[in-house]
Length: 614
Figure 1 (cartoon, helix red, strand yellow):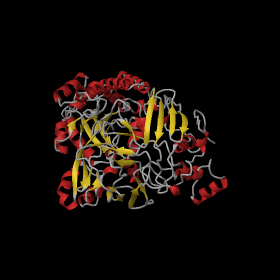
Figure 2 (figure 1 turned 30 degrees about the vertical axis):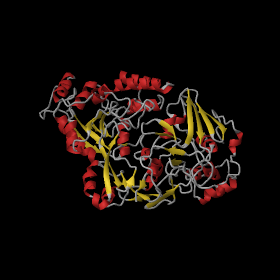
Figure 3 (figure 1 turned 60 degrees about the vertical axis):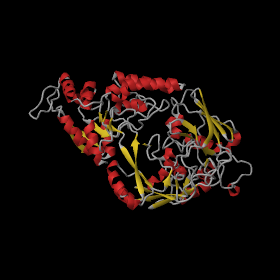
Figure 4 (figure 1 turned 90 degrees about the vertical axis):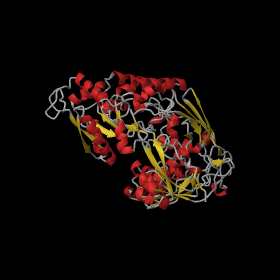
């Protein structure tokens, strides 16, 4: 049965929707009557050609929607929201979102894309107790209250929350977004509310499915992009069923973007993903087996790629990564060991460890001096940037680090010169890694040498990722090394949650505080650190702010309070990512930012506008 609480659909005709006599069989391929016209394409191109890319898993077909980057609302290069699939949108009071679709827009199979596709998702999927037993995605709730969804007409729909929802636009614009629409005309044939019970039972048996819910979910995999029958709005549609070693996606003849001359995009005819062993990606790229490649490449591959240019026909560009830090150390403020927990919660200890590290030397040894020291905070490209924020906890000062540790009472040492904890144990621990990258081990070797200068000894132990997570959650893992903040270039409209103890899974510096927030106090521990408590208050202020100026003011206070606490110990940022590009491939930037969120790696640069010069 459908769950109707908190939902009001005011257009009854939306339940079974058609647009006149416009049927897919009669649809003429082409963009919508109201296309999105791109007027900022660096170089107007021409159609044709295949774009080959190497991937390491069959599930990487998801890159076709990541790189296609067609979103209801997307980001421009200034990271401001703009309509993309939508013709327009408006926001009132931070809580009322009115979305207008493009006239004449169609799915890749030629069927109309209308508000019925959004209504179907909300009423028949997100709030259907059989398909979504835990309810709608969390970002579509505000204080556990769902929106009121009002279908105004075939092209207009409104989402209204009782209080502001600052997460909504970012969620539907993300690299891996919440898709709030579905191709209703295709998926209804697998849905219990639209199919005769006997016919549905037959389909379940034929599919060897457990029940109709599993039958449905096997076809509704928008984020996986692996069902060749599932219509799409992305620039390319997959035509190769899984499993395969080569996946081919062909142009979507109904894609909504055009260039300023009216030429429908994408320019490239086919997007091809070849599945290879991840260890072979640099070698095969150097041999010319790809036309555009970034995944599977690291900075250490750059020299080889440069030397292979004549053979491969690819030029390696270097794009700057935009994490708050390429890598960071995470002392566990919720450590089970009381002695270590007390040390980690003392800002003097965290600062001492941070300034003991010679980040310039680390950059020289591992990144040819091209990486920059980082505090695991925002980068200069962010409009919220301030030098005093970026420079907090930085600087290499062994003498001051030693003085801070002495001041804390850690002035006793053993015969090796290692400082002693108050209970007499040596100041010695294991920094745990997920064991997925040798780079982390190389970094820790250099950091260990710096820490030894202040009487602190570290060792390295790799673990399987899930095992490591459980050790962090339980407090057994004292310190870990992992990537820095995902988004180092936030705006006032970006959620500041990476700086606040609200997440158990992605914040190994305070997992139990994050768990307490996520479970609303049913598990974990409430933060007893005054700064962390204030950060939570500010996060709530940001959530209810209705004006951009208010959100920016909250952001700035969060950064000012967070930065000097050295909660995490950033190492270096702006590590360069090789992006190997076929010499004849146009409109790929030579210099750019490379990040998953919000840039979708290469997606924000619109691969649908890439084209071959010959």
